[in-house]
Image (tube, rainbow, N blue to C red; front, top):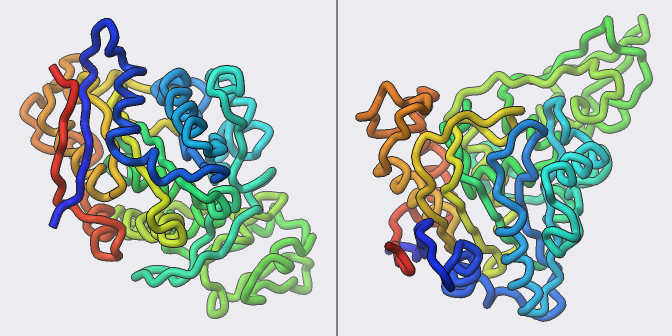
Length: 370
């Protein structure tokens, strides 16, 4: 068995520019056909961190929005707030960043909605059957949308090796507390010098694992704690630090399970589009983007997030290395992202296939290529 992945390269000419090719890809892949009149369509995208300009250009996103509208859908661009401190940690800063990077109703033709609300507390607990989780925290606007379309920029990542459709769907759709669950295998602890005894963590803890000690400082009982990350996300004083301690296999598998929490409730109503352009060695969450590893290679679409990511990796690994990139001294690197980050990229693909997200075997249908 294999999944269909549609591909077109970055060659262009009069009457067949990159916007034309984006439209053709959207239609040929069948993604347009999953949209019914009146559907609320979540277009999951990364708006880019301030200082990073490797994100997908708004004019390309506008083509996708216009095609959704042509089918009678009601599209909105969306992303969830970050766990780390940056320019997208709350909805106000997040929207300001999106506007600064060129995403507005005027440029993309759709409203921007931060999926997990003002401070990342607006999410739904979705039941799944996974290796690591039986419940995942999916941002509300994404969960309640009728259709989900992940528009992903393929690039490197320090922990994952690379990021594509699966990471954009799983990590990108998780509320901050969910991001803590994916990033850490260590239970949280209180920093007493920052704790003011306000009791916020006690109120949000689902397992009643937190109490106030006699000194009016919070205490987390490790025997009751399930590591859900709620206290980390809600603490107003940041007295419960974010734990980033994990290994790449666990983090990738957990992210695949969050992706399952997005996709499973919307069977037959999810599509994935990957852009292999500006393939920077690091994530779009960084405040910079380095020289791309390979030349712009194309765009692809599929109903299968596993297949499209596998196809994206294969195309990148077959491409020539840009001489002045970070891989310039390793022209024979067989796995480009592993050569950069010393991370195995396949854990998320292997686990995604195992839990039923899709197939690694794919059939590539190319069109309008040089």
